[in-house]
Length: 315
Image (cartoon, rainbow, N blue to C red; front, side, top):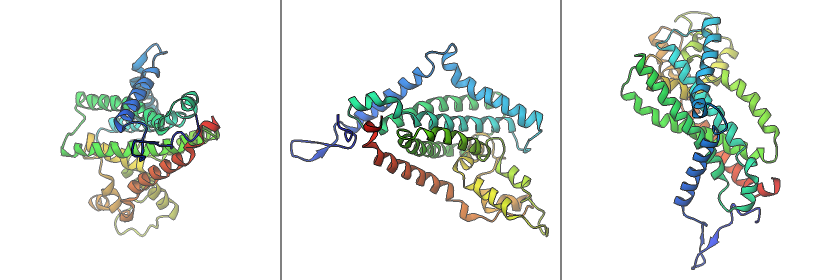
């Protein structure tokens, strides 16, 4: 099988180029691969599918103990514990999706050399497998919130769907980029592990943007002459531009409580005005998270497509 099989079309009776199968065929193939990977992930474990629930629960217990009980970190917002749990569930999906999808091509070398199909299917299937677990965990968070009466449901819950789509597209773009590079450069996995540590603490998993605003002394009294140091302002702007931070912050508002503000209120300074804080005054940051998602998805897709023709040779 030629190494360029992923991009080579076949010809129909009229000589026009066509794909080797219909989109529906690839859709079903992708779904079957995703379901198979989801099942295989837990087949050799004693607890089986319970691990999909236990992993974020255990991570939540550890981080909650360290940050809240030990270091007494609490941003004072309503339902803080559930907000932390929601952040951890979102982060767990992002971490598992990118890590597993990164190896989707390299771990299926035999299949790639023998079968003819778009190689991106393997990455998409791996990401969907992680998405299944994420949706289960999200339902559990919702059930826990209802059971504890720590949820304020409103029309804003409709925003959950586009926010989840934004999260998935971001994860998919990074996965495509990492998977394409990992085939030839296995160092990518080690580098990504290091970057993930920094991203965790810079993505608002354990705290809200309003808490950061106060801790970085941006929440100064109106009329104060105290000067905000440039590097603190830069840290706040970078966190606000981070799509994961924006998604977690907005999901907390849409799914749990309106007390956790939309990111837009923090960025434009409206929240600061209400609380008599000095505003961030960075309206230009509003579209940045969405532009980052679009850029990541585009770069990831183009990189994957450019390197796909050499996958068979490098495996």
